[in-house]
Length: 142
Image (cartoon, rainbow, N blue to C red; front, side, top):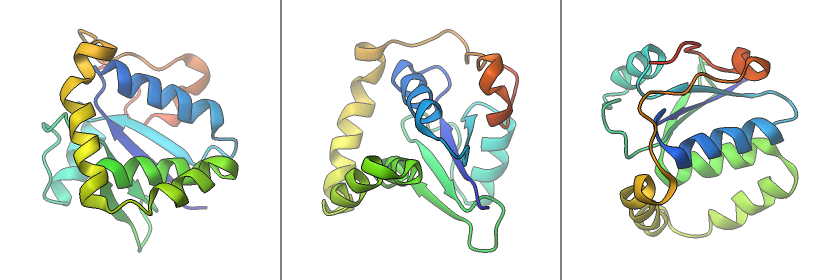
C-alpha cells in the first residue's frame, strides 16, 4: 500500500496542529510525517530541486518510494493529505480542488505569512508522542 509523506515546519504551531489532526483521523495509517528541518525532508526535497529551508511551504510526497511518486506543495499538498483520510475529508478535498491552484495558493501564502503570530512558534522541533512515533521518518527532534 502506497504511503503519503507530509513534510512540515517542525517549529510551527499551525503545522503541529495539522499533524495532530491528520494522525487522529488517519484510520489506515497511510500518512507518514517528517519535519522540514530533518534529514528525510532534506534528502527528498533536494532530489526534487526544492529547498527544505523554505519553511513557508508544506510538501507532500504522494506514493512515497513508488514508481509514480510525486511531490505536491502548498494547497495541493494539504488537499492530498485530506483526501488520504477518506470519508467526508475526501469529499472536502474534491470540492476544494475546484478552486484553481494559483488562487488557492494565494490563500495558502497569506496564512503562511501570519502563522507564527497567530498559532505560535516552538524553539525546536517537537518530539512526536510515543504512540505515534512510528509514523515519523525522523524520530528525533531537530
